[in-house]
Amino acid sequence: MAARKCHILVVGCGIGGLASAVSALESGADVTILERAPFDERGGQTRYTEAYFRMKSETEVSDDFEMHLAANSSGYIDPLLVNETAADPDTWPRVARGLSLTDPDFISTLATEAGPTVTWLKRFRIRFDFLPTQFLTKSQPRLLPVGGGLALVEGLAAEAERQGAKFLYETTATSLVLDDSGRVAGVVASTQGGPARIISADAVVLACGGFEGNAEMMTRYVGPRSVYLRPICRGGYFNKGEGVRMALEIGAAPNGDFGSYHAEPIDPRSGVSEPSVFIFPYGILVNRSGHRFTDEAPGTVDAYYERVTRQIYAQDGGIAFAVLDAKHMDIPNYRLGIRTDKPPIVADTIEELAGRIDVPPAGLRLTVEAYNSACRPGSYDPLKLDGRATEGLDPKKSHWALPLDRAPYHAYPIISANVFTFGGLKVDRYARVLNLDGYPIAGLYAAGEIIGTYYGNYTGATSVLKGATFGRIGGQHAVATSAQDKRPAD
Figure 1 (cartoon, one colour):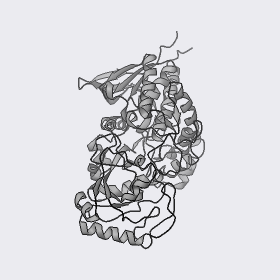
Figure 2 (cartoon, one colour):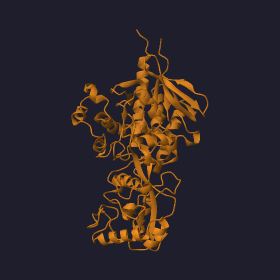
Figure 3 (cartoon, helix red, strand yellow):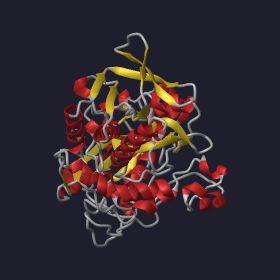
């Protein structure tokens, strides 16, 4: 007797969920996709992002890819235990298996499978190119899908529909269902707030994002100052953290920094998706007291904006102001670094500008005077690291230190957006969710932001790539494993 066709249940309709679904469909499974959002807003955060890939070609990741991920792969862990994870995973001792560590095997798999994943995505009429980005200076290349994340959502969703996937919109999974053997066998879910029901499956893929849209979880994990954060886009408000919670409740291992998130500088006045402000390296950043508090230009903006934004988040009220003079408008294509749809706050004098941004005029004047006095002559190149630094100023400014002395003066308010939360689930190279002892939980996979990966500092342009890669891998493996489990005994 032939085994019946496997049923794979995917929770979430962003890049991780759609890649999982299409991969499982190609492997011969029946697939159901649960999506909390309505049809017109399907796609999670992927729908709204430009979806940068940290790749130097369609087949190769950037030169620093594995090194950067490894450098931000954990907190302080016994180095002897970390060293043991450099061996074949099958040989790891029990104590090393469940570590809160983004291990070398996971990183290597992501790096190795990124190219094949791009090739796979291109089969669904998704094109890639090295298009202009919002970074006026950058240290690493970024490959983009033409049309951004929305092109990924539409291309993969169309393929899933063509292959017969069942979509259940406005449907939320709230807990996992286990069979008598402890295997994950489905979820409890409700549609449009209706009664809960069980949806059975041979395997479940959790691809429903982090918890940036859940104020209680943000306060519990990130802290009470998280009230000063907001999701980067509308899609983030749908990420309520049920996927993380329901997996932890059945013993899944956590991974990633639960007390942190990916930070991006945005204009709080704007309601558009990702209203970023990356122009600040060409001026100064001041807090509500009118004082500088950080080096605005420690390096290329693509590599350092997150660290600078975290300093903004630490200020009173979680807000700062980028103060610039008219010279920033001489920078070629300077508008690329300003994605907000709100105009700058403009004034003819520093004191007048201070009044308009509600900081003490005398404080801002003294700050600008001290900064201007610390600027030194030298070569200036706004599109390269020019080494033109302040002298005798604390904190210093390392590059592009030109005096602010040409009216009109501009200011942009900046807060930290929460692009996604770092805390999530630990998976292996096959996207299987691991338990606290580091062994796979039967029938449970994860893809996308829900996979906890980052500690301290985000490795830029890897999140969407991670979702696509482990979604593709997890969908295939879920079908293969489920089919094997259902094979009749001889």
